[in-house]
Length: 405
Image (tube, rainbow, N blue to C red; front, side, top):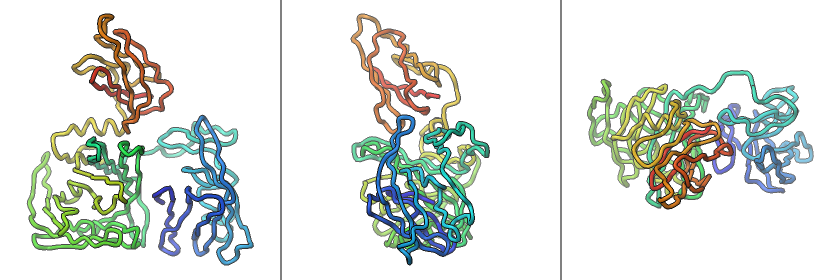
């Protein structure tokens, strides 16, 4: 499955195509077609409401489904919770055309995201769910985004798992663009790739075909075509060289295209050093400019980095800071304990003779979550209301990083 523009698409192996599973945008009276195994169904939103759990409010759709060729026969009905799914099973179940024939799902117990319980129904204990815990991704990429307001945010991409698309064993890549300069949190999309015979193939969602993204074995003068949406991008190999990095030898291709949309260097086996995908043809008008790779990890090991940035600090931010102790550095203040479970101490050089200073706490997306004033050399700040994660506190023109657990 993947989600784009608040619509969830599911890959139906029976007809070898993606189908709309949920349309979280749909209003009362609107509908969509969903293909399950060999059957087609019309899903209609009968009403829209909301539900609140643990101070979070979720939009809900009460839907009914009919066979597409028999609209008078309602074969399922229930509630879809926005961003979570169908309350009677992630997939709709319609007897002979259901995902699991004969199964009788009643309702969802729990929904967790990154280990945090976000939604819970019934009286069951959802704080512990047996089974495998999430593993660290095998492959991870980190790119910079140059925003229209001049600020720098990031694009983080990782291999989330594997699936089958058109009979090809395919890797699922989750791509997260941080776009707080546009009033957004994260823009999350999913891409599908596989490698064979020295070529990396990429799933074109518009044409529903695989296209060659990289030809790692191409020589000077060779070319290949990338199909991006309905457009074709002709890539030409201008130069090939080998570079040494941390005891490893990498083949690097200098490539170009007539419109200079995806020109740059490709490190074979890792990816394009400007943007992994042709982002300038994929931004859907939101102006995202991915400007360069910082880091590439394999099973948590920093394998390759481009430039002088500290990539060990980046992966600590992405996976959580493990070290305890104050975040000191040079400057006017330190914070501790770090990580904290509710109270953050700010130690400053503030004295009664100095003016009162305002502090600002922001999350990873740059959004302000707390503000206040520092009036003492050592001051407590209650951060127990913040969800667990990484934050930045800015005071007197300097910024420190801390983690809430």
